[in-house]
Image (cartoon, rainbow, N blue to C red; front, side):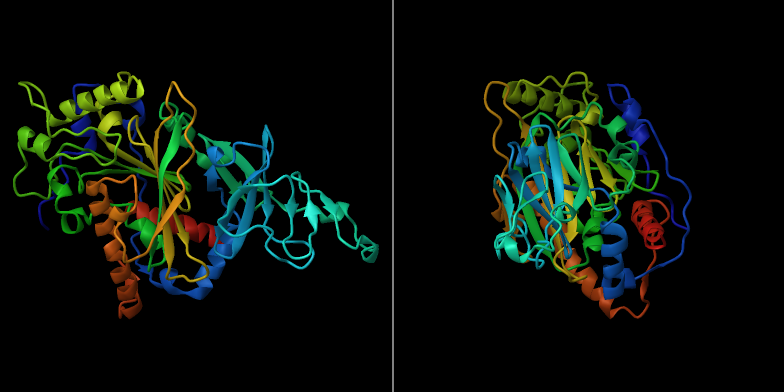
Length: 452
């Protein structure tokens, strides 16, 4: 067996920082898992895809939109997942409702898929049946021909709706447990990493040719980083990332910035690390002009620079956050399809969904956030910019050249993996015991839902 190259550990890196280890980052939890191969049918089978729709998507809490997408009474946002569709509408100043997007007359969609807008009522575009914002049937044209119709029994079917950290979640299972129970440790971990006073500054939707789970799993491990992102191995930890699993619905990986990958034959000096570090989104620091003083590390200077920039640009004081909270990639996954960045400076959300009814096509929605200005109105959330599989992330506004390159590298692999799976003679994948443990975690949770 070759020598392990997974040191220093993430915890060891934090212990070398000048700032203390934040309590939430000091936790470690990765229970033992089985080692069996996972069948490729989970990425190709129409039967598996249909079972996911009925037994997973109909039963889980999932992010539909942000509260900022529907700030006023009558504002609505249509959320689609596979063949399912929910109208999320602000029915009053204090309440948000979710309705099945299907007319109770002859089934027509009440609102266009993926549409956003405002209306005082919900009216079918086919024959004009009309409901108020609380879902009660108000008007049926030619009502004298519907003397047999029970108006009270024809309220719009509802989904559960709840909010957390500015995000609007829906669940089509009206008997599901409360959202906060579902989220497990997430609210506690994000107690000091709030999204409420941040707004969607960029929303990019990428179409990819692969199963939606494959798209997500590419962001759940860094085992691939030295091969797919060789430029990143110079300035981030990868094989030594920390992977934690907190029950069936929440997991995370913690990736140190400003360090060399253990895969390199020689670690970079602190000066080299500082000079080669680049920002991962517009809110993080640019360290190319910084000077590494005696006794300083690249991580220290990167954190100091970020704190200074946040104070200058946004009037935000990040001094109460540790260096790791300011610069590191702290990615949490919420089953089944949500990836959210923790920390003080990097605020981002990524959602992975099937595209239509095809198990080999998916979309990746990447939302990035900026602080709401302290002395002005809240900016409108960015509109969705959709890019095709063959287009670079670089064509979309609000993304750095560095991050566009990284995401292009990630998504360029996805078609190859999907086509390779379909050509496979083996018919299954073999996962590593630790670095890919969160991939297995997601599959294990899927199987629990499919077995119910």
